[in-house]
Image 1 (cartoon, helix red, strand yellow):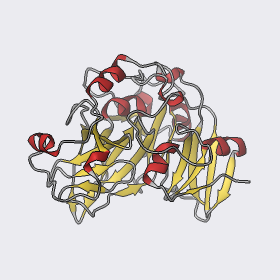
Image 2 (tube, rainbow, N blue to C red):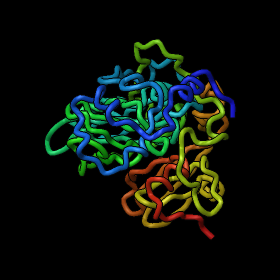
Image 3 (cartoon, rainbow, N blue to C red):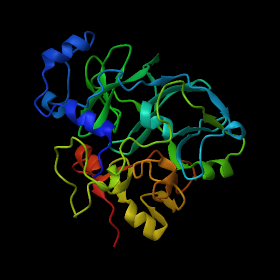
Image 4 (cartoon, rainbow, N blue to C red):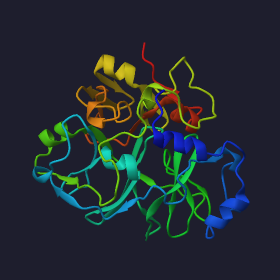
Length: 320
C-alpha cells in the first residue's frame, strides 16, 4: 500500500501498546473513566490527539449553483430533513474534519465520516432534550473514530453511535437517514439544494491523505478478518446488523430483501483510492429505501472488517 506522509506520521505516533489511562486523564480531565463498556486496551491513539482533527461547527452552506470547486464524480453525503432544503456535505471536507456539527431547521445534526472505516453516518445531536456538540478525540477502536461530546467529554463510537466511556455510557445517538452519491448525481436530483462551502482551514481539500488505502490493509486494526473469505476492505452496505457486500449489490444492481430496496449506480469516485479524490476509481453509489413507503433507510457503506468488529454476530447477505 502506498503510504502518504500523513499516514506515516500517524504510524509514528500511534500506540500499539495497551492504553495508559493515567496519561488520558491528563488530557481528559472531565471524562469519567470509572464508566466504560469496553476494555481500555482496545483503544489506540491514532496520532493527531484531541481536536488535532478539528470538527466543524455551523458550516457555511451555499446554493448548489454557486459551488465552483467540486467535480462531478466526487462523493458527497446527502441529508434530508422533512420540510427543509436538502443539503450535501462533500467528502473532500469530511476527509480532513471528520465531524460537522450543523442544524437543519430545528434538528441539530452531526455529519460524520471515518476514512479508516469508510463509514459515513449522520446523527441527531439531541439526547433527553439536551443538545450536544461532537468533536474528534484522536482515538481509535477497531480502526474506527472515537468521537467525544464537549459537554461531558464522554467518548462515542462513530460506527455505532454508542457512548463507550464516560458519564453518557448506556446512551446511544439516533442515526438519521443519509446517503452518499456523486456531486453530479446530487446536482441532477436536487438542483435547488444546498452544499457545504469550503472551511476556512489550511487543508489540502480535494486530496486524499490515505492514497491507496482501500486496496491495502486496515490501519491499526487488530481484530479478526470477516468470515466467508470477504476482503477486510470490501465495501458492505450496512443496515442495522446485516451487511450486503457491495460486490453483490454492484453485480445485481437492485436487491429487494428484508423489506428494503438496495440500488447501485455507477459514477461515484472512491475517496480513498488515488491522491486526487475526483480521479478515484468508480465504486458507484448506493441508495437504500423502504420497500413499502419508498422513504430513505438509515444505512452505511463501510468496510467489511468494521462491520464484523462491531457486529460479530451480524448477518452476511451473500445471496445465492
